[in-house]
Image 1 (cartoon, rainbow, N blue to C red):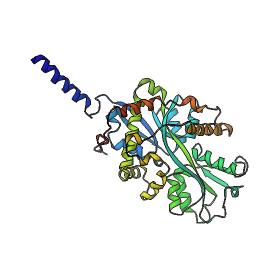
Image 2: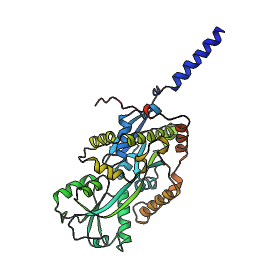
Image 3: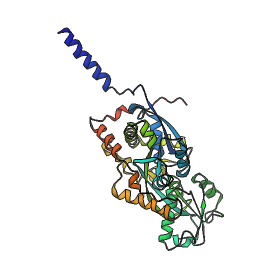
Image 4: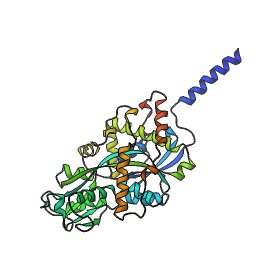
Length: 350
């Protein structure tokens, strides 16, 4: 009887140890490629850095920051990151270059826009004929802008001059310009929060605003080496999104500090307004699923960059999407009552 009582108490002790929220001893390192000035993935990335969402799911994360999608692809091709946060067009471009990567879930929706000085004589997209437009080549904003220009009756390859310009350089052009002119550049193309900043402070007038689907993309080689990592990462990601949604001011502050951007929360609120997950109240309310409609839109992005000679191979996006990891992550989070209080802010040693 004493032996049986010992086993029972030992079993309870073991169950207690297994059910505690302490992170596993052996953590899997994962390098996360994110875009330093891009809301709202910036808040999610910084939440992953400043809280225990990764370690509690068995991962040790390192953030690798870049300015936008094209250099992030180069980091992926060089093997410098294991998972990236990127828009549909850069993701398709990465896959078109033969990269051994897979899309594992939806990242967010984000705004992209084409804009001119507030007092510019350019009133519509059709007025861009013969004009010089600066944009970050390889970013989804480029595709949306060129498509909108084509829909306005112009030939983007003949009727305008496209100039490659990093998103981080746009503020300088606007600041050096006047309300009616940005010097040698007639219009700019960009994405939030840059768009939101210029829109709210009336430094630019929007000619067109579009919506882009952004995705989480992971290295297949990394998955082969760490088969459970994509599930663990998606669980961590969902927890980070919920924390951001319920601690928005704190996550915004982390992002602003990391990006070194200076503006108030109204900018971030405008940028995040198109993403439903920022209004989530429970873990089940965080939806990372790519629907058939969204996949169709992503295929249009892949077709666009091939048809316009931006890549040499047409990609069938659906062949590079695996949502089974997300299904498993959703299942694990639903197995028991999720407690958001298990997400804690880490002590920072910086």
